[in-house]
Image (cartoon, rainbow, N blue to C red; front, side, top):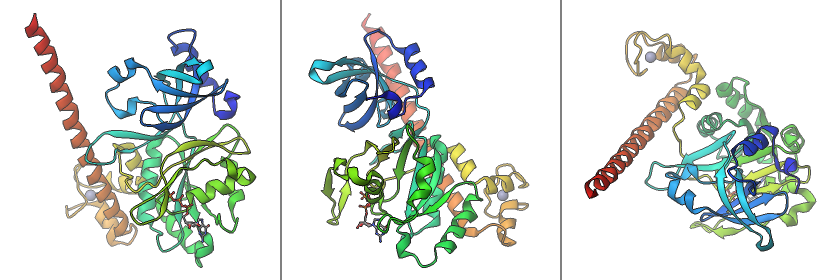
Amino acid sequence: MNLLSIGLTETMKSEFDHLKAEDSLIIGRVALEHKRMYRVWTEHQELLCEISGKFNYQALTREDFPAVGDWVALRPRLEEGKGTILQVLPRKSKFSRKQAGNTSEEQIVAANVDTVFLVNSLNEDFNVRRIERYLLLAWESGANPVIVLSKADLCPNIAEKVTEIEAVTFGGVPIIPISAEKNQGLEQLAPYLEPGKTIALLGSSGVGKSTLTNRLLGEEKQAVKEIRSTDDRGRHTTTHRELVLLPNGSILIDTPGMRELQLWNSTSGLSETFSDIELLASQCKFKDCSHRNEPGCAVTAAVETGMLMSERLSSYNKLQKELAFIERKSDKRAQSEERKKWKKVHNQKNKY
Ligand SMILES: Nc1nc2c(ncn2[C@@H]2O[C@H](COP(=O)(O)OP(=O)(O)OP(=O)(O)O)[C@@H](O)[C@H]2O)c(=O)[nH]1
Ligand SMILES: [Zn+2]
């Protein structure tokens, strides 16, 4: 496997040459992760890898562990088709979400993504507020967002929907309506699907991500090794994410339904997604204005004049609140870890 064709860049390569701790290490890209086992693409072959013991010992949070799309330094055992991962190379972009369940840990969904297709369907599920949310996550990730509107064949007023989205993106994000079923509009995705470029698909369950993947795979459709299972509503959903090499040489990361998609610390993403509100806010009388009912609030004034949609302001307030909540929670976690660490040091001291 040619490493360039799976997305290796000069920068990443020199990063590896610089970082690798021993000469026998080789570079690879994580294609699939399952319970701390990794399928890694290397120039020789695909290897089944585990992480080194040192990893388990050092890595404190989930974000330190390898994720799909990561470049890693590994010690190969070619005869066995196996290897041991020793290091994760610095990510040039990462897409994270709050881990499922009641924790405040970051979970990386995909790493080293060039473009992220935010897939939203044009049927009755269409929701501009959800698009805002995805955009926030995308801006935070470091990958370039493209809004893909799927199931265009089901929508009689596509232009209207596009205008609705443009009202929140200000022309800064490409918006591409497609129908994977009717094979329409897919050619407009071509500029992003260049050889060696990595694209991630993000979107709620059922918006048509797998159907789009199959379309892009074209005649190599048979090659999609999909593990599908049935959810509680009896639907078949994608249960794992993996790298897929498209016939034209680009690399696709298909993700499972993002039903648990939640925000992670993304203050810069918030500013970028709501640059209009932040600009207005800089003109509020009070620096800590909450834009609810303070005097001299430039934001609520803009809502009154009809310049800013009130739904957009509520969306901003809601997302900001969520972010503050996550921040408080992860602060608490950091504090408790710090306490544990000190306790350990203290106990050790007492031993001597
Ligand atoms: N009308 C229409 N239906 C589509 C189109 N694309 C996908 N569908 C249908 O939408 C349903 C869900 O499509 P999937 O591709 O499985 O959706 P997904 O986003 O991969 O869903 P998860 O795997 O659960 O994340 C299927 O019944 C598809 O046939 C389209 O362009 N037009
Ligand atoms: Zn204000």
